[in-house]
Structures are given as structure tokens and as C-alpha cells.
Amino acid sequence: MTNKNLNWKNKGHRPFLLKPEGKDYLWGGVRLRDDFSKEIDKTPLAETWECSTHPDGPSIVASGEHEGKLLSQVLKEHPEYLGSHPQMTEAARQGELPILIKFIDAKQNLSVQVHPDDAYAMENENGSLGKTEMWYVMDAKKDSELIYGFYRDMDKETLQKSLEQGTVEKYLQKVKIQKDDVFFIEAGTVHAIGAGALIAEIQENSNLTYRLYDYNRIDKNGQKRDLHIDRALDVVNLEGSAEPRQPMRVLHYQRGCASEFLCRCKYFQVERQLVNTERWRSMADFQTNSNSFQVLLCLKGCGVLLEESGEMLHFFKGDCIFVPADSVPLKIHGKAQFLRVSC
Image (cartoon, rainbow, N blue to C red; front, side, top):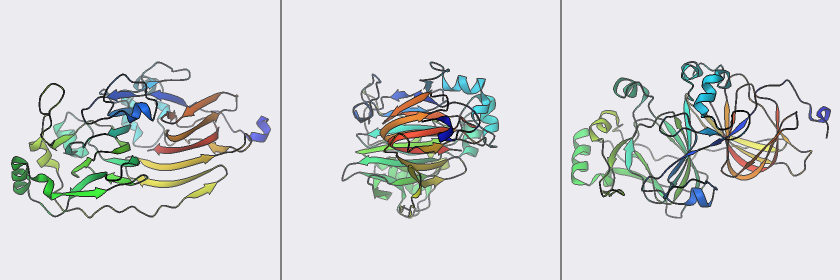
């Protein structure tokens, strides 16, 4: 195999692996360690923050010239890695990503919660971003479900009374879920992930969660977790929600891979990409442009990213790869499934 055969282009920035931060929230399980080889000494292991510059769970670079550094430090040193998209301007000044990517293992139900939008968070939460998010269901038990809004229009008085009386569940819209489902959760939407779901979450770079209801659970310290009812009532969308339907998705094929759009909003764009290159000479091309970085989150399989220089970045199920804007031209070889995230 020669460089001529591979048709390489101009050089650029090189991709690197990320090491996540783990969270031991009481509702979590062990699947992120058992199924995705997350070597994090926390039990339960509820979440791994795979691509994050948030101070509550920063990612660390795990390969290449920046290995061992916080991702936020690398982006402060190299703001060009973020790209020229207008959304990157302020992020580049702070050395921050505008998004955050997680794996979530819900052994038990998550709390019923709501997130503020950017305007409310900016005014009431020290200039933080709000939180709009997307869920991709990697796996789900037969009876798994999620909460998505109210099944009918509500008012604050009725909602507050139901919370006081512990009857709020009768107003919540519950939706059965299955593997490969996609849900877009706009800020202000009451929601919760149900027990038995394994989720990949793409969201704004925020850790603002207002709990409305937590099933009267007790944490490891024997205490009930805090609720944030006043602020939740400030931001919640009280209109009844139509039951979310899975949109028709179309696979687009090219040599060595297929892809489909899952979600596009003003904060992020997510595609699912399936790579299957059976022979070494059969490879899929990959390269970012100057507009935005991209993140490859490997959901299944394994493979390698190959550079013109001969450098190889091996990846496996559960790995998260940060590809800077204006990357070197890359070839992907292997059999794998990714979420491909950009801004």
C-alpha cells in the first residue's frame, strides 16, 4: 500500500483519544465497566463524561502529543482545534467545548427533572449555559421506558400540588423505548430516563438539573436528594407533549461506510456512522473541515484511524475520539458503529 494509492491531501491536526470522568450516582449500574471496559473505580458507575471540558467532570487526553493534559487545557493552547463556526468564538476564549457527551447506565429510574434554557441559566446561574440534549438508546430492557413531558396541559398550581402529594407520576407521559431509538429533549421539557436503559447523551456544556421528584429515595448517606421545585417551576414547559415518534431515517452509503442523520439543532449535529471495511485496502475516508471539530463515539466494534505518516490510532467499543477542525486526512479501517458529533 502506497501513499499514491491512498490519495492523501494536505496535512492538518491529528485526532486523539479521550479518557472520561466517572459518576457514581445512586441509580447507576455496572454495564459501563462490564460492557464498555471503563476502568473507573466507582460503584455504581452511572455515567462517564466522555468528551467534556466542564469542571464537574473534565476529560483527559489519552493519546498523542497532548496525552495526560486536560482537554480544556489543550483547547486553551490550541483554540484552532474548535473550528471557525460562530458558536466556537466564546468557547475558544474559555478553552471550552460548547457540548458535552456522556454514556449513561440507568439500572434504576433517574429523577424526574427539567433543565433551564440559556436565557434563564445566564441570568440565574452565574452565566452558565442551559441544557438541551439528545438521547441515543444503545440498549434497553423489554419493559424500559422514559418520561417525556406531560400527557396533557398543566398549570403550576396543579403541578405543585401533585408534587406535594406525591401524585405527579399520573400526569407524566411515559414512552416505551427500544434499542436504536433517538429522543430530542429541549430545555424546559420534563423528562427522566427509566430503569434498564443504556444511553449515549449529547448535550450543551452544562450541569444544571432541577429535580422535581425523586421517588423519595435515600442516598448513600441516608439522606433524600435535594429537590429544586421553585426553579423547576420557573422553567418547565407546562403544555402537554405529543408522544415522541421515531422519524424515518435513511442510510446514505459510500465506500466502506454508511451514515444517517439522527439530530440537528442549533447546538449540535449527530449522525450514526457504520464502518465495515473487510480488507486493508478497502477504507473509509474521514476528515474534518475548518468549520468544526468532530467527536467519534464508538458504540460497537473496533478499528484504526490511519494517517499519511503511517501513524495509527486504534479504537475499541466505548472509546471516544476527538478530531480537531482542519484535521489530517484519515482513513478508517475496521468494523464499527459510531456516533459522529459536530457543532
